Amino acid sequence: MSDIDSDDDVIALPADTLALGCRCRCRATKIEVTMEDFKEDWQLSQFWYSDETAQHLANYSIAVTPEGGALGCVSSPTVFVEMMKSDSLPKTLNPFVFEFDKRFAVFGSSFVFYDYNQPTDLDTSLHRNFDTLVVDPPFLSDECWTKTSETVRWLAKEGCKIIVCTGLVMREKIARELGCKLCAFEPKHKGGLSNEFGCYTNFESEGFRWV
Image 1 (cartoon, rainbow, N blue to C red):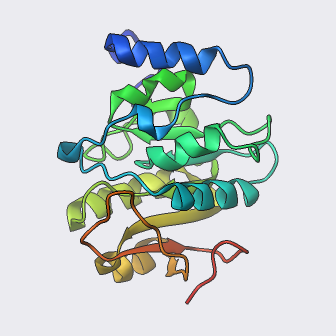
Image 2: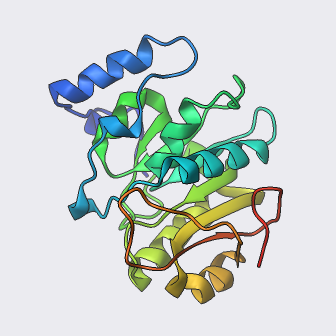
């Protein structure tokens, strides 16, 4: 297991990213950074959600997380950034983002470097720690989904609420591996996406109703 505070995890960031970090730290409560500050990297299969989708996922995932609970975004930086600037985020809730793209290290201790190829190579303090997880695997492949679902099971405490956004082709695998069902809510992306996309949860709430 890696140690989050070890010297091996020191990250060298470009000047423009460091400037974003200053903007994050200068705000005592809510941040000024938006997804407009992060260009999509298609080599990393990055396709940002529309504002409406990001707000829906952020607000309703916050709503189902208990006060003082743990909330994580696995390969879902759009939702994480929306959470961090949301008026509905309580001071007792500090979301984490598990992400390969080190530009998001500007969020300090809320950022956890994550490579789905090493699904449980994470600090042991995170094991079975999360009450709510928002998940968006970067690639539509069996290998990526299998490893990402392993990460989710490793992070989730008993009764964890799981929200997955990915292609409809993964519907059966998601149901089998995480017990999540397709919801009526349909995620949208800013630039559009050729693949049919869906939202799946292992629970129902006001924002997530099963079809």
